[in-house]
Length: 401
Image (cartoon, rainbow, N blue to C red; front, side):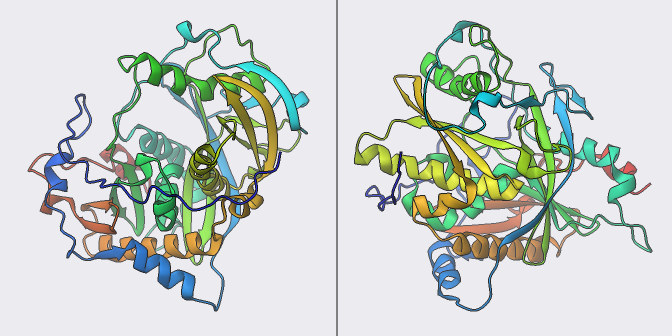
């Protein structure tokens, strides 16, 4: 199957202010501060910033030196363990799939699937536990002890910033508006998600729950599991990958569940696969919708050092064909410039660090709407007592002790 190059989106941009949303649960209420954000506040204009980075012809910015520093697992009870207990391996039958015809019913055994539990900051806290377990090899000792890292955060937070220059060509709402909490400690900026979209839970509609479960069922097929059995969506395997973009060192927390079983998965980030499924590309509308998945998959892959994406094409919830695609080939498929993404991310990270370093220890909000990327002191716009804790005391008290 040949994808060709994807054309530009005809949909343009939507108004993504999101005002009036008010989700229930233990997540921070975010509608109160968004109404205070003004276009004239200091920030990076997304269109102008993207134009500027495209116009530069000298030098190259790229993500390089992907180094897998370690792994950890989370079980069905959401318990952290410093091991590979949740790692799965790709079924050898799919290692060299190319236009492979299959019959994978993603709706099978849906009724007994276990839906996830969500808690804001949970994945960052697990990363902090992993850092404490490995602080002997990570911490640089000196007059002021530090981690040799400029940023620490979950992969999807960096992905959303990388995709900002292409947002006029991406149709998914979760990439239009983004909010991230940030705090600096001993020279390192820690990032934590601020959910603006309602998560899929057991109380969501049957349609949302079924389509959300497809990714896990797809993984179950590819790893030789029994498709007649359910699964726990809480089970996760995480890779902690250090990459550099320009001179900025980033620790990327990437949920990577599946390795090839051949390479040394403990040392080689290229051993891990990305897996995505998509509707069969039968018309222009579906080809346009497919673009955002291609750009997102490329961003996810390069941030974690992955080499291959396994794509499943489905009709009515049944995957009928598999494709194995090199991550480095995805920008050409989506007709986007990797250099634009890298330069823009570098520009935004420099902007964030400059802002956050003015008030070390304070919690900042990084907010991206359809116009700008802002970074401001959370106390300036959030109600008293609503600013979350990014770094718990148990971490700050132990990391350099």
